[in-house]
Amino acid sequence: MNRMFSLPLRFCVLALLTLPCMQQGFAQSDLSDTASDAYNATVTDNLPEMSSMPGLISGSADIWTQKTLTGDWGGLRTNLQNSGITFTGQSTQFAFGVDGGVRTLPPLPLIPFGLGDTSKYTGRGTYNVIVDLEKFGGLPKGKLLVTAEHWYGQYGNVSFNTGAFTPAVFGAALPPAPNEPGDLFMTNFWITQPLSEKLVVFGGKKVLPGAADVDKFASGNGTQQFMNQAFCQNPAFLLGIPYSSFMLGAAMPQEWGTISGFVLDPQDRTRNFFNSQGGGLYSKGAIVSVEVKVKTKFFDKQGDQHVGAVWKHVEKTNLTFAEPPPGVYPEPTVPGFPTLNDAYTIYYGFDQYLVEFADKPGKGYGLFGRASISDGNPTPIRYFLSLGLGGDSPIGKQRGDQFGIGWYFNGVSSEFGPLPQAVFGPRDGTGVEAYYKFQVNPWLDISPDLQYIHPGAGAIANDAFVYGVRANVMF
Image (cartoon, rainbow, N blue to C red; front, side, top):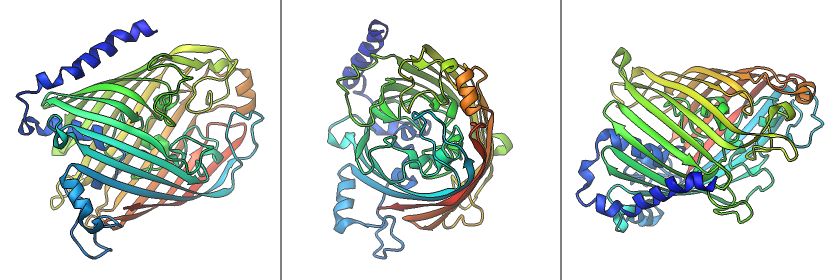
């Protein structure tokens, strides 16, 4: 295993050491719009939209109209930003209830299910620092993203009371540390560096939701758009992938789109940088992803389509002997159960504007969709489909409102053994979600949300209705 990955790791290190020689003639103006899009996506995914704006401070003395709740900090924030250090903070509150859902608790303590017909409250905080490395003597356009996160209240909110494979309130289960409320975790330490207009390299510790299969109208971590994981990330390949770990990769922007790929350490590093008991980088295998994204112009409107694959060379529990889903996230195995070493998911996704606002460049709404097929064992979701409509609201476009409505389908594996079949009755799951995000002012948004879920654990759960409100405060 170590020999398998020692050569590519040495090559990556050598490439990073030789960057100054490669970049002697590279200037800021050399970066094309296409390269900038690919580069910005690796820095700002899952961050509030304002984090990619050139100026965070509105200059308004009115607390209701300034871009952040805490304002300019007496000029300090502007000075820091001009010096190359940008801070963004976000507090997210989830208040949700579920009617129906889990009716009988499973006899296995590894599964964190709770009974349905309940309501919960959860909060989470996210704190980001984006450093312009060029202003500190680095190469042009280089960025360092550092993120700290914590949660409080009820971990997962009502996600584990529905009986579904996909968490209904995804953002309330992040970071995945169910027994550590209030603890602050550094989940990003992430460097992105364009080498030319045709090559962007990145590496470091990274939050994985948002690293692949990104759709404009349905992605992220459940704090900005949809809340059910099925519309945030493809659940087929996300199962068994650590929330935060070390990654090396590159994106190659072209006029027609982008080719990208990465190699990920499968050990979860959410709680720390290096776990002395877990072994070194890639000592337990590797997760490899490649993706090709193509720009489209159907109906003379912007859009893109992408296809990709994720291969996991890491031990995962054989579903014939496991409960669904296998292991306790993010660990892909159950102690004492037989394992399989390889898993794959092939996926496709698209987003396509139907309406672009003439008076709001880059704003509008359209269709999105995802589809994937996996190995079926050890991956518990054999295939996945989703389709929906979302984007910027035509009703509240002056405020910046957003909306979305979508449908998803989880095709469960047919290889579960007698024990999980008897205890859980794994079955295909489906669901519908609709949300509307009111942008109350620049630093506050409130999103009512409604979901209907036909869960995947048929032996212990009934159909469920999930309803509630999410609120974001940018400070």
